Image (cartoon, one colour):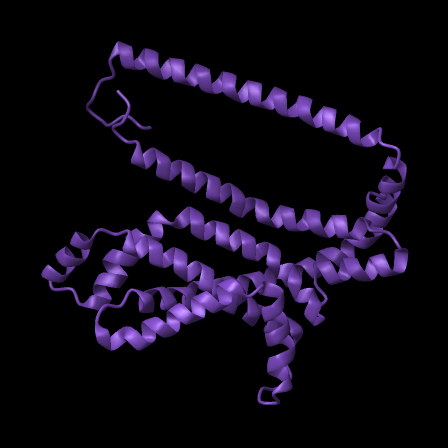
Length: 285
């Protein structure tokens, strides 16, 4: 925490800060050592099992990993593109649903019921079922032109995750104290301006870690578009497995998904830590 300008820190506070820094360094050292020890114990336990040689050949073959990596990486680029457009769609549609569910007045009751039914339905349906319904059912109607499988997969992800994200947004908006709305209206802001300038910014700030977690979950489920025939990282790995009879490509695809998830995971941790520091401002002496 930065020290405000024009203030001095007492000797007692300096001692407390030095003590806390020392405790943090010791905790970090103990955590690192214990993690290494546990990892070594687990590794020794796994490699000394009777079937480790067979598992290593089937799941961790270096030659198969090297030959399958380029195709899987190319398929991962499709996953990244789907994730990009799905994130934009979810952000827009989920905000729309959250705003509808927070509308006041009896005249908006049908809209609130419709939005509530939508969120209940798509939070209860498994993602894979939605993918089948959208990816195979909607094109079978013959209304829409022929579109690539990744387009239908993106739409299915938007429909599913908008229900989750809208509920998180609604919780954040309702956590804003009613006095904020009243103060904004007393200043002459309309209902729409109050939502856009006062309620939404504060609500999003309150639930940012939860929102990022939902997008991390969607980042993993992007791999399910392979069931529609899209040649993404998972389907590329499946093709390699069918030709080599080795499961190492699945491991490579899984590790690549972990790599693209790590930035968002670390961002979540950073946002949670920053929010915790903000809430504790003034709490230390």
